[in-house]
Length: 369
Ligand code: ADP
Ligand code: GN1
Ligand code: MG
Image (tube, rainbow, N blue to C red; front, top):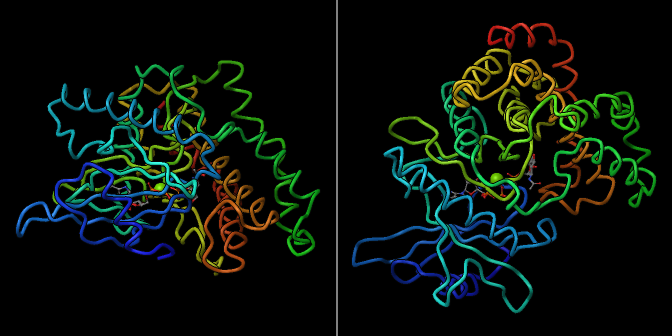
């Protein structure tokens, strides 16, 4: 843990927890924020758990706008869940306010902190262990998007501008390549060429959104499997978490990013590329769950474009890992020297496999047209 426990507990004490903060440890495998699991003593023999998180303000430049989005979206979801007879304490993130008022704390060292209640009786997974978990995550992400259909999109701050604008991501990659700040471009010629060969693909979704062929919706934008809590008892996707990137976007972003991560037969950072491929059974299962979860709200065009969503989100993510590698690993957390390069390679291997399986992917999706 990079921060002293005493310092973390001091920050935790500023929030309205039930009982006194007793213990705190690092938690989860997110690539962006610093996440801690906090235990408080609510009553003798009764503990109460929370998530304390340092928001990464290099990535999210406007923490105030970010928290405004999150309080807005979670209160909206709360109402919807209550209307549907659900349990808002478990089915949405719940922001714990500061004792002094407000939804986050800015520390003297310029860091920004927030707290959520811990979603008990559920887990998030870094790999698909059981296909039904992946299916349930699809239903939940689809349903999440459906619940937010009436959210006032214009009130949302764009927490990361052009987040899934693949044309802009390509431009940023080219800029990093030209600067070659770490002198790494010479070692990754094959990966660079992989992107350059697919520049035209990068336009497809941007163009369709711009022309109105596919609708702009309020989307999650970071739908990997470890951003959903699956209930221990029912197996259902009980709570969608990591709401930092809820912004206007395309349903294809949410669908595609889940396939990128969860339908991969290997880990996102697997070194042995022979283990990487797109598992078509998982692809089919997620497709079914997502379309069901969206409850008839996807248009024919969106359904038709699902394979393209999967391919482009995977290509874009690989391009982002490669860009970060070229720039010296300042964006994604890394745990070994070539971590971003390994991640980039799995993504490109997955893209290549999708291209080889394109007809089969389309046939799976066409059943829903
Ligand atoms: P990052 O943006 O760094 O990915 P996340 O918000 O996804 O951060 O949190 C990282 C991990 O912490 C998640 O994958 C999940 O395992 C866990 N987590 C986050 N919020 C909660 C919560 N409210 N209840 C339980 N676990 C959580
Ligand atoms: C990051 O925050 P986390 O770990 O859930 C990233 C996603 C990438 C993902 C790749 C805000 O997600 O966009 O797809 O890593 N989040 C942000 O694993 O950049
Ligand atoms: Mg996350």
